[in-house]
Length: 256
Image (cartoon, rainbow, N blue to C red; front, side, top):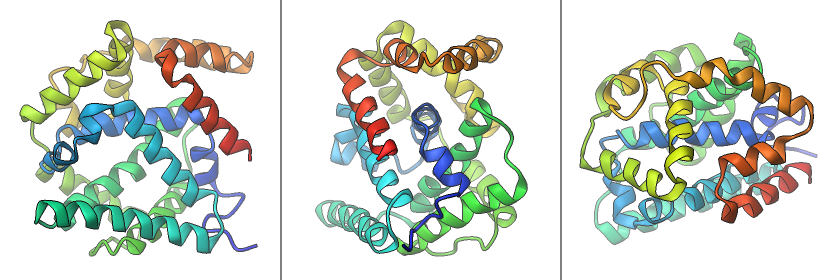
C-alpha cells in the first residue's frame, strides 16, 4: 500500500501524539498572531470566533494527510487549496505566496520544537524527513519557491521570521480571545508553553509571554504522569471540558 508518509516515519510519531500536536498549535497560535497576513483569518472570522475548534479542524486535515494513502492525501491537500481559493474569491484578493510559506514553515518548525520539548532531540536525517513531507504538502498546494533541503529551509525560515512578523491590533485581539476561551489559569499555562516554543524573533515581539517560563522546570512531572498512563488527567486539566471529546476523537483517529 502506497502511503503519503511512510509508516515508520518520524512524522507519524510526531503527528500521532496528541500532546505534541497541542504544543505544535500552541506555538503556531502565538506566532501566527504576529503574522502580517493574520487579517485573512479575521476576514473569515473562524479563528477569532473559536480558536480551539479551529485547532481541531486543522489537526484533522493534517492527520488525514500524514496517515492516509497517497491518493487520499493528495485529495485532502486539494481540498485545502480549494478552501483557500474560495476565501480569496470572496475577498477579491490573493493570499500572498509568502503568507502560505509562513504557515507551512510554522508547521515544520513547531513539529520539531514540540517533539523535542516533550520527547527527545531529533537527528538531522529526521529533521530532513519532516521537511521533505511538508515540502511535498506545499508543492501540492502550489506554493512556489520552497527550499530543496532542511538546511536551506532553515535559512529561509529565519528570513521569514525577520520580515513577516509584527505586533498589531490583531495580535492583541487574538490573545484576548485565547484568554476568554481558556480562562485565566489555562491561558497562563498556554503562555508558559508558548514561551518555551517560539523562536526569539517572535518571543521578543510578544509582550504577553513570560521571559522566564516556570513550565520548563516542571516538564519532568508531565513525563512522569505520562509514564503512569495519566494522560487523560493531564488533558482534563489543560483543556476546557467541552473539548475533551475532540481530543479523545483525535486519539481514536490516531489508533485507527
